[in-house]
Image (tube, rainbow, N blue to C red):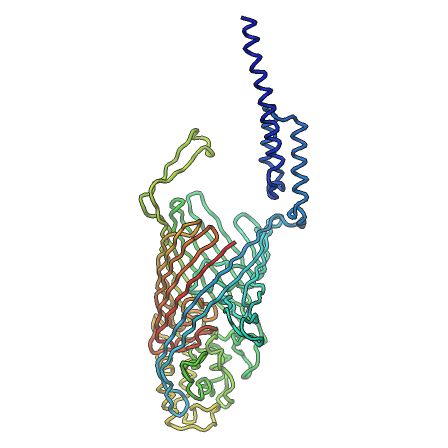
Length: 591
């Protein structure tokens, strides 16, 4: 038996040596020519080291051979460009990101006829249509610092209009077609933050939106500047409580008219800085990993602006100047109906000019005024899945969480029901300032299309001002709920997470005349105008994990047919839209 045993073991020894001879060089070659992964190497090459250790233990490689392979891989990494990027010792991580959107867009608005202040002239009905090919580019970097600090910087195209970032292809400049005058980028986010505790975070700078909100109140491209404090805590039962306080530097002296010239003469700048304060509290309850309900309550107030107090000297004598001296030729580009420039939203400048003053103030800030705004907002959503898809859990060891695997059979469709409601507590006072300014026209035959109280005018011209739709609309507005509030309600089906995903969204939105801050609302949907209501539908598809497309259509009309639709916008300039159509086709790349 002994010889037999020897003869039986001898071939196995030869087989082992043969295995080492064959697989040893193969493993060495595979490791030697393995592509260098900078992240892999930066993290110590954990997987490669584990593979080398396994080969040493099996006798395929010696310790010396394993060390030589590891040294060679490190040498290869050190010669790459990635290894030459030197990170400051204070930086823990950095992420580069951005997006590029190509868009075809058609906007169309029509307006009816109306009287002007020019001796009874009647402006014709007309329309304005924009067909544009556009792009938006954003590129940023963000990361973590040590000791729980974080940071972020982002650039965005078209710094001339904060509410969209869109640049029109083919826009001409002084050099001719294909101009690049607006093809520039500027910083739209720059911030530092500190996660003081697992639940409490402080942020300062021009930051990503810290509030839970919707486009009905905040345009997606606007980044508030100032300071914010955030609290977020999740309990074991699935309940999450969150709260945010924001102190935002809203506008400074010599701005775009938002300062309203408080306490100063016509045309001079307000010396103070305007702040917007936001306080939000909300909760999210997770029924399971796919089902939750989320809701918040937010209050917005302002300081440094006229809120209907003593800064108003008396009813303005410049109301006539807020109307055009002659009807605009519609549908000429950038034209608007002549009765657009009335003191629609009751800006402070429309009521701060003494009766004997010349009519030189109030032309545009009446649209962007922030007097008498104390807005409450209530966004909410309910997310769940429908379909026969069932989750199955398998485990080898119930005590080992890593050994649990989940599979899903059948289809399932994510659904999100969402809504938002906002109400301006001072809407009646906001409308009251507009009524006060307009009422001054009564009994003043000289208040016609001229630029001064003492200018030439006729009773007939004055009567036509009184008959204008904007006058009559403002005179009888501001007391009903739809003028004072804004609301949005809709549903979304699907999600965009990976290649092949689809998403569809349908919602209705109504924005009352005096309901919200007109300087912050979204320009991509209802032309950044108040007193607009309508429906929005969109369908999106992920062609790859980072490339998607979207088609969107919107139709809108006035909430209050007696009022204009004022806007602070660089798209359609019509201020009295009776019917509005929007079509957008987007191709988006996120990286």
